[in-house]
Length: 113
Length: 116
Image 1 (cartoon, each protein chain N blue to C red):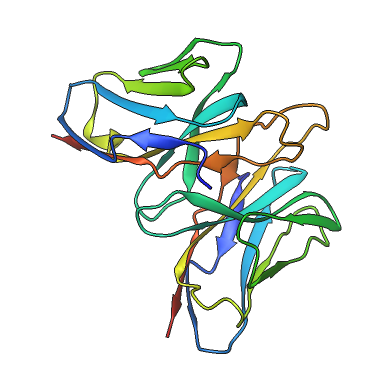
Image 2: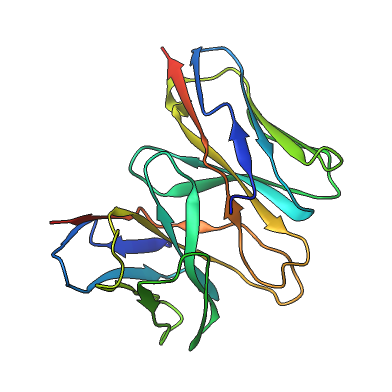
């Protein structure tokens, strides 16, 4: 079953605007990761946030994690047309006893030039 | 040039045929994974391997088989028992530490499998 669920499923914005995507999950986690996928390509890791962290930055990316609400958000500031892609969150369940990440269905972001 | 190489990029399977998807990595990673992606869906784990000569079933292993004879290679066979094989298949690898939680995955560029 899907652990993480992204919201919204699709998002269309103008270049220069900020894009916010959300991820909710069901069970306690060790960490949460965000990945990006261009159409027909593999996924690329963007950022990892551990369960004891609340916020993390990487360039134009900002990720927050609220373990009490079991949710995370990915903010892309000053978006560019090249940011057009699908974005997935992935979680590593606490105490799972195995080495697995569970991915959500993704948010499809379109940035209009 | 380090990374993960998947081949072929496109593959067609006839009914009743087994096909094998190749995945090779030169990142010296211990762990390797196979995921299946259907249109508009997330990734679902088929098989994973943490060490040579050992692998574990994921959520949707039925109709698939794997081998891990070398650290660098983790081929996936889609057998005739997999009745709905049309999907985008992604191979990934990661470092693995026994006491650590998951680190980031490095993905190949995928293989699109279609049924003739």
